[in-house]
Every structure is written in structure tokens, then in C-alpha cells.
Length: 55
Image (cartoon, rainbow, N blue to C red; front, top):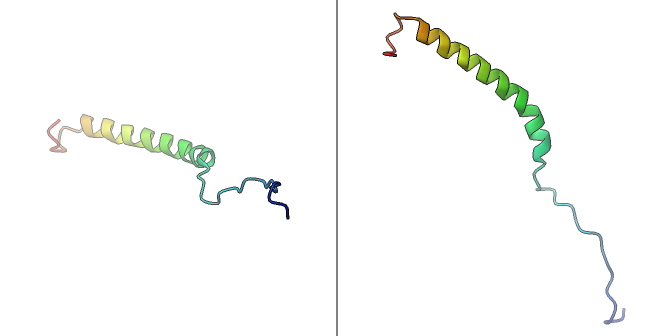
């Protein structure tokens, strides 16, 4: 092989690169539901005078 020419190669795909788009697509509905549930729990706790939470 001649030293003046170099073979061009395609860049390697990193197997460790994070594909965050897929993760967020899966997590968003779950996080939204968890947020709704926690808001409901907080609302119930704030309305219960006998819970001794001191709110």
C-alpha cells in the first residue's frame, strides 16, 4: 500500500451511545401518571384533619 493514500472508512457507531429519545418516549406517560397519583395523595392528605401531618 502506498503511504500517500489512505483508505477512508465509515465512522463506527458507538454501542454505548445513549438513545435518549426512546427512553423519554417510554418514561413520559409513566411520569405523568405518577405525578397525577401523587397530587391526588397530597390532596387527600391535606383534606384529612386526623392524619397528624401538621399541615
